[in-house]
Length: 273
Image (cartoon, rainbow, N blue to C red; front, side, top):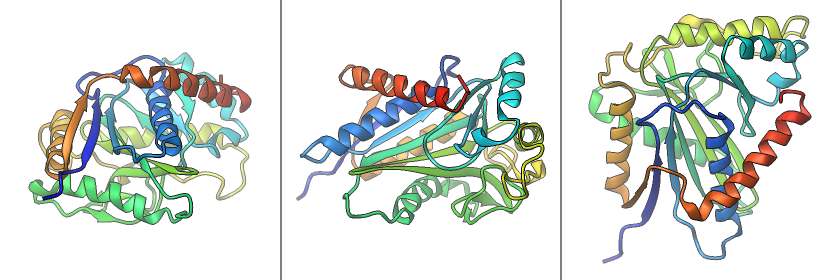
């Protein structure tokens, strides 16, 4: 009988972080680089985290005509901002948003993104399978951070998925609105684009309709962030031998610090330090 595969789970979602919002992204990046350089297969990492009041931008957002002004005003109001290195567009974060990453080795010759998007979508669908709600996949018009792997229930988007590819590894990152007001999150994204995108050509940024967003609590699922994280854990435990962590492992700290420095430098290169 073959042993069950090992899955590593880093779960800090029990608390809401308030430090540098780039730190969780640096952990994903460090683990991806570890997976890419190792000759022996590295177990996949599932990373769950939350952050207090932040706006995480896509690379295109940082190039909008008034992005620097919009970022300055957000920061003056106590909202952190940063540019991530995966795809997608602006995503507001707060305590009701669970960020979920899947980091794993990938063959260098396999450049097709869809299977990796589908793995993340399948994990989230399975985690919500006991709720009786039907999760649909496909772009939701008017939602923020739109994409073909938007996840929605009854036409309301609650999750978006982005991806970053390295030579021999992949990072798939999702945001999941577990509680709070989807409309409020949508208004935050809309207001950012109204300022940052003033004077930009048509199609340069998403036209956000806040009413197209909803949280899982608004869609009838109880328990909020904690319940969702628990459901993800239960799914993973059924798939393999789970190695659970509640902080970045010491073996990864040095690489994570280097990745954080690189991410900060990248943010500086687009004028958003």
